[in-house]
Length: 624
Figure (cartoon, rainbow, N blue to C red):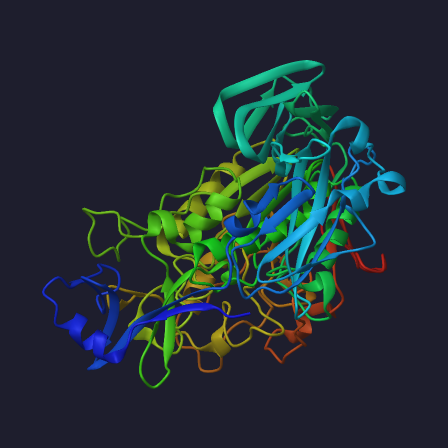
């Protein structure tokens, strides 16, 4: 398929650079806004902006229409040829509703396809739609190269002609679970008043809408509840969820951890555009079977590195659909990694190119679009405005941290989520003039917030254990020794703000980070990381080699021991082990797919690591 691409010519760039309307951005003084867009000018070289969009979510969600014979699809993609697979979703036949695909798919020609309902009649009418005049079909769009582009749903009414009814497009997803409440999110094709039924009581909320986020409270701790959402007289969907134990409870429970599920190799569901849905389904199924309280998933959900918010939304939707049948029942916490990068990309005539976090930051940054797609706590720092390196303290210049940096608790465990790819500029390492933040660098305001948050947990008698999670390892072992918090021991790497490098390099910042986790907290047990597509655990103590040769700056002493547990083995293409100064402090390295399970009981933590594809347990140890 052909991407839509818009690239300004060099001649146009020269014209724009002479326009009187050009204005430099406060954080990127070399990027200038002209009457006709953005350019980057540095040392006489001009880079023009390029934009591409393969497809967007709206094209797929709004495509079905009813007609006399069945359901017609127009994906508004004239160059799309392939196959449409489809089949009934047998609500309420299963706890985890999925389509059962019909034996005879239909062709997609020039972006259009037609389902003939007569084919699904008689012995193939497993949901009694001919009698009820109603049903839901799941459909899968596959292009002529065999790539699965989208999994969707459509609810229909009638027996001919057919109409499209209000459809539960996504969800419900459990977005928060507490001792006395839980929250859900779901999305419908048509607006109506949000509702939920718990214990037989119907709750209705707000004005009609298509995106619904509800919190049900007044519940009991550690109790399983059935809940339902009702779209109309014929559509009521029922699931179950267990509330969290009391704050400070020392009862036994399990939580899970993984990251890095961007699409992989091998064909089929290993590449549902943007996501490795094959492994993610197995991850979620195993987590549900283990009755986890929550699954923390720390970044690189999707392939990302895109310039189109609509295309990013499509990839996020594909990730959510992969785990949706299980997300109905327990909390999944997705957070950001570098592949969640949404960019403005610039290129010169020689083909050199780089990207920066997409602006306007409030609506189109990687952070903003991530927050639009997921529901996380809002208790983190606001942004990096007001820091010592802020070039203009009278204005809001930086992207927000909302829903990408936060903390939450469950029973006696606290989890602190960091965004180590905030305001990320992928070209910064090799092209510092582009400006932006460095991969793996925790910026000033976020670090200050981390310090305050750890202090609160230190003083909270209900919390015995704290886990820190961010996408990038402090001690990379395979695939990212060239960057993460190490950069082959080169401390020169650092963010560039308003054309100026910040005061402290990556290894200095890593040490400040470790000082907080190890020396200023007695409760941090482990750092949960990803980025490297493997599983590995690293012991971090004062004996762990962690400096390059001839290091002349201050060395931070570590007063106790914690562990880094890297699990970037959720389906992304693997990375092998590399040589590092701390390699003798690592154990368990494998490229098997992995789900890490933490069995917590009071002051004890046992860890099991299981391959969700084979169900092999290949590592276990006592963390606390």
